[in-house]
Image 1 (cartoon, rainbow, N blue to C red):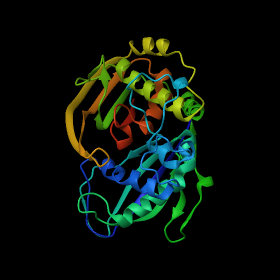
Image 2: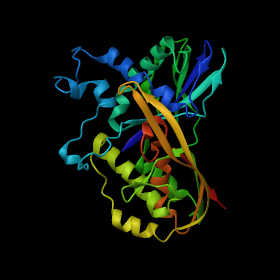
Image 3: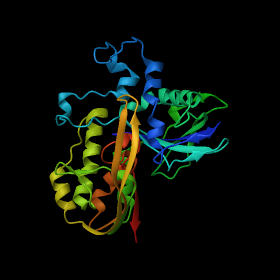
Length: 316
């Protein structure tokens, strides 16, 4: 499975009020704009639309699960993109605000629609009070190769160059891991609340390494099943058995609770989870590729909204 990372640079044209975890603000309104931009049948319900499988909106927001994907009944269907943004707040006129977008697998072909939708969202307004912004630029990021960002869209030029994008594959991450000295200690910084589930209940304590890897592998496997060539050929039981030998050395965590609002459901949406720092020690080499990818795919529920974002730091 391949992923591509992009950075969007926004310029506030009026006062912007973003939620504490600002990715949900960036997600709100995006779906309705994409539907307006791409719907050709104007049906009120996408379920029976004859072109739903080729539609950018349904591909990005209403993904359907085939039987071959082997999803559990009632399981949350992951979307093929992830929003990652800094802590929100108030932005004054003239201030810049940057956020990142990860696009997964085949969904990258819909990047032009995402760029167009975010430009349109800026004209309609964002967050509380519907503050206006201008989409200044979009850059492609190379998270493992060390290359400088490539600007693929500029407001002044008003042209998108999707062919210039860097791409990250599982193989390229494996190559990076092979060149990296095997770490014995690793810090995982949960930057936004991670809503993890263990044994059918939300995890409120520091996750053991096996529990963390279950979340990472589940997320990666589900995205591969829906947006790539199928579930990866991994020996999950062997990996998880090895993960049981990695020790949770220390942690500093807190429970966090945030509230969003679903415009589609017209009701409040809770966004709860744990955040903080976890330190693990042991043989971490086999897990580096998946942990690396997990930084950009996030873990747990509502990952598309920016929840479950973490950063890795190898401890000398």
